[in-house]
Picture 1 (cartoon, rainbow, N blue to C red):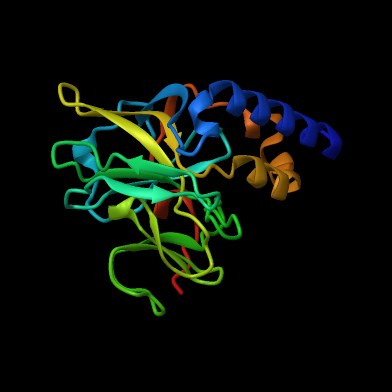
Picture 2 (cartoon, rainbow, N blue to C red):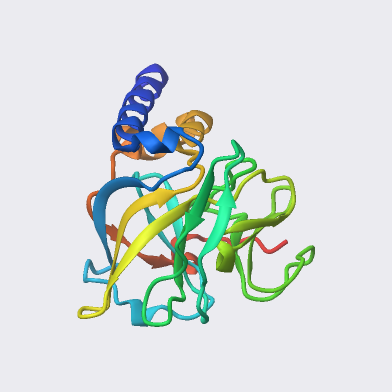
Length: 235
C-alpha cells in the first residue's frame, strides 16, 4: 500500500468509526463513553485470559480499539476508585474505577498524551513503574521518557507532572466473575487515535499495511510488555 492510500484509509476508517460510535452527548460539555466492538481478552495461545493470572503491578499490553493502538492492562494490587477528570478540551468525564474482584484492574491507551509515544515490538519509552523512576514524583505511576509525562493509573491516569495536557484515554473493561474473563468494550476520555495514525502513518504502513486501522473485534491478545517488546527503557 502506498503512502497516499494509507492516509486515505486511516482517515476514512478512523473518522467514520469514531464519529458513528460517538454518542451525541460527547460533543457537549461532558465526555461520554465511546462504544466499540466488544473484544474478549485472550492469552498468547488464544485461550480466554483470566483476570486472576495478572501479576500485580506488572505491565501487560493488548491492542484496542484498532489493531495498531496498544493498551496497558494493569492489576494495581489495590482498589482504584472512581475519579473526576477532564480532557485538554475541558470536557469533563467520570472514570468508573477498576474492575475485578478487588476493583484493581485498569486499562489505558498506551499512547502518551504528549508526543504520542507508544510501545513497539522493538522499544518502549512508556510503561508503568512499580518503583520510582529517576525523575518520578512517586512510586506506581506510568512514566513516559519523552519529556517525562507521568500519569496515575489509580486515578484514571490523571497527569501528575510533565507536559501532557490530559489523562491517558481509558479503555473500558467488563469482568465476568463466573469465568474470570475480561472484555474491552469502549473508551472514555481524550482519544488521540486520529493524531496517532497521522503521525505514524509511514511506520504503520510498512509494518502492518492496511490492517493497522482495522477495528479489533471478538478477541485481543494480552502479553506481558517484557514479552511483547524487546527493550523497555527505564529513564
